[in-house]
Length: 422
Ligand code: 2M8
Picture 1 (cartoon, rainbow, N blue to C red):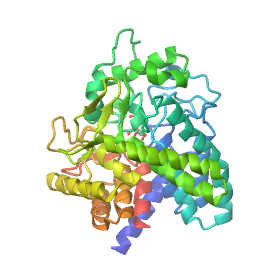
Picture 2: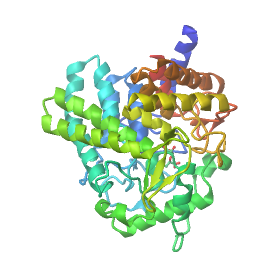
Picture 3: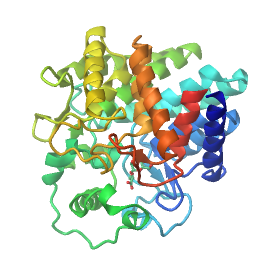
Picture 4: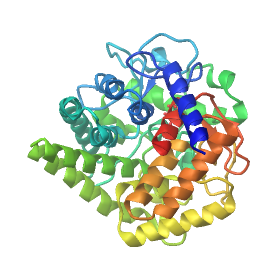
């Protein structure tokens, strides 16, 4: 077994090195030729196991492209590439180095705290953490200012791409309300690199692009986009990541003597955690999304409602989520499916509508381990490693058969393997 682990770690490092572009890492060649926000932060965790300084650079490069308003974009288009749509010409955000105009799950605060906690060169790490602290905190401020204008304690996403769970069943009803009138013709590239049956549908892409055109028409003024978007959904998983990042940043700020910044981030986390309770569903025993545009819960048992455990929750909620994961384990071969296999709409191969993703597994396992549910965490980690052993370093996997899907030689999958095995 140790030999097998050594081999897996060597392969993981090889993939990450192959996708390394010097100061940032692409998720995989061809399909995703740029820097993605949450990919980079999770990638840094893996990099730290073989090159600590390079890991900090990954997050620094991302944060260097933060907008003046505080938003950290979901993609940075460092180099020209014809292999991805929509590229800079569609987004037209007017940034010196082109970026998209929407964001992604705020993993950075968590990632930098974890890097620091394990740093071998602690003084170098502290110096780099201090410089990032203010930027990441400005991003958190931006979230609560622009994406929670009513002060509910929870932020909304305004585009499915922001969630990172692009075509989740959670968005179906809200996305169906997005119009397509005036949509400019476009050609997808993703289906040239990955099996179209494993990717979002054309109808979904039409609405993704309509939203981009709509926001572009508003001049990418991020203070206006929330109210102007027909798509506004509160995702418990997305909020959990932000809450955890706020908590971690608050701890770090205390250590660095930045008490005001610490208090602000702690308050965001505490308010967010309390508000998460409004998303709990007794029938399903998990959290649900909330469609803010129509003011109704989204009755859809997805992984977003389980990822909530990453926020740090009251014991009785963690216990219930552990039971829920136990039930899911009986419905598939590999935890954690991105949608309940017994629920309507589940598709075992289609991207975020059923397949397993190692990054989400990692955060869920971390949440359970932190809450003392070590057996659940171990079950999830073991399943992640079984997927790798059976099917290699894929983008995502069928939770029943372990079939590898999407892009191959995938950076964040490799990073998570290093995290689990080290
Ligand atoms: C996927 O999303 C991009 C759009 O952002 C795409 O399909 O074109 C998602 O899995 C997302 O979570 C991820 O960050 C990105 C790059 O790995 O790919």
